[in-house]
Amino acid sequence: MIKRFVILTVALLATALFSACEKDGDTQKPTINIIEPTDGTELLTGEEIHFEVEFSDNQELKSYKVDIHSAEDGHSHTKSMSTDEHIPWAMQKSWDFEVGQKNAHIHHHEIVIPTAIDGVPIETGHYHMLIYCTDKEGNESWKAIGIAIAMPTK
Image (cartoon, rainbow, N blue to C red; front, side, top):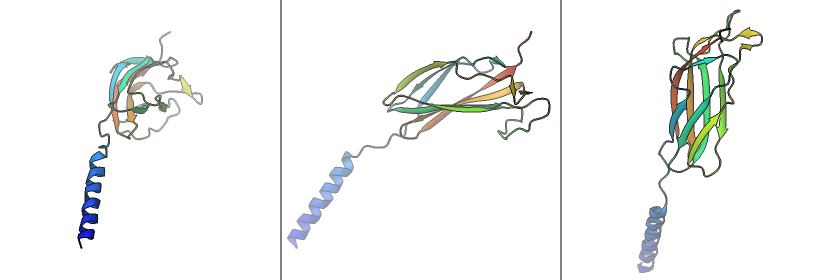
């Protein structure tokens, strides 16, 4: 009887000790600071987007994604139907951060707005640019800006 009590007590103490040592999971979402483009910026077909964003996380960044799509459908985020004259442009691309990175200043010109898709000019007008950031634990944050896409003047 005493032996069982001692074993049970030791087991309970060990469980409490190991439980106290476990880390709480990271629940804090990463932060996003968009520098360029700014909300309302007009961008031209055939040109690169000046993309400059700062990301940070309390533990470790994992990846970021850029999603650009037409907002001419009443902001419903449904797939727009193309016409014979113009086609809505959409793109999604993801990048990974270096392992262990908590802060990142990203500046690139990798996103190019096409002039046409399969020979059909892209639709100009209002677009959404969403920027997502995910940390190592899977917490995600996002920010959205409105951009305008126009044809260059000659």
